[in-house]
Length: 416
Ligand SMILES: Nc1ncnc2c1ncn2[C@@H]1O[C@H](COP(=O)(O)OP(=O)(O)O)[C@@H](O)[C@H]1O
Ligand SMILES: N[C@@H](CC(=O)OP(=O)(O)O)C(=O)O
Image (cartoon, rainbow, N blue to C red; front, side, top):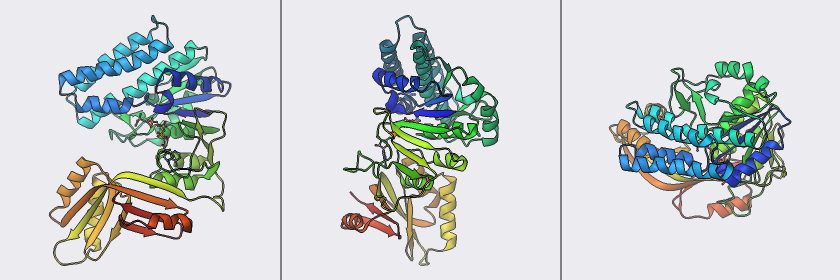
């Protein structure tokens, strides 16, 4: 079996969906599972819907906009009497009910935000069938099983593998299968999500459980470059990368692939192709079991919107293991990931993604133990496999607040 994954950009409008369905149709002779994300920026719009749910006027307007966005795409793809239009209206009615639920915020979040993928996968299945590519809609929640941790469900791998192995391959004998990225089902039967941008991970879950031949993620870039082309001028395309290298890139913040994607594929030796949906015949980047090239150009990874937090001991002692243990425990309890850290005699500093509510909780928990200062709007740059020339050009910067260097990697926090 092969697994394809199409993200929001590849299905952002009717023209993009036509292109995506053409790619799928050109591969329909293989047993194919297609994992799709929500269309365009729908997930962000669903988040907005949630934020404004207590304001009835704003909420009705947002729901109408969401319906209109999908209806106008479908008007371009289907005849006016197609069932898809009733389906869309029903989905919006269901959303309205879900938004009024008195349940816990994270639980409502998953019931609401998952609609983006449910709607897009239904539209795409219908369009493939409309164009003569026999396709079957598969509910990912019947297969990807998680714990009850809403917004960041942890996969129950044993159960998920059992369910996927039971029937996905046989279903794929006569149909292209279309399913949703990003979503799963909790033990209590409700929908969960796997964390923002989690559809790449969904593709890896299905591929790993199926021991698939390969996974292809179709992106708006030619493959993996040595820097985000939106931020790094003249970035160079990698034709291949070892699993380890790709995984480390995602750890440092390369957003082209979700960080959880590589491990399940590497464990089973499943190759991952990163290809351009605009130029599908070009080879893209192949992530597989290979060696890092001797002359590999340095990779530049830029993470914006970073927050530097310093914990200063307040009783004239030094930073010790007990202080550190308390800080780490609080970070772990609040599900906060450290991007870089550094200590001095009396202070311990961490850099994390800027998330106001998490930072507030952290400060509240630790304010009696430390003098806490924080600074937002920073940029964390990582040079992986640096060469002297690139290193010099990045170090020559008076706005550096913190830097770390090892034999292969250089990292700097900058106040831009
Ligand atoms: N090293 C990199 N190589 C290529 N693209 C990168 C890199 N780092 C970040 N990106 C960004 O990743 C984006 C594609 O990923 P993403 O938007 O998450 O895809 P999708 O949501 O469509 O699956 C590109 O538009 C590019 O800006
Ligand atoms: N739609 C979800 C999941 C996802 O992975 O989307 P994309 O593949 O477009 O990044 C999100 O935006 O978080």
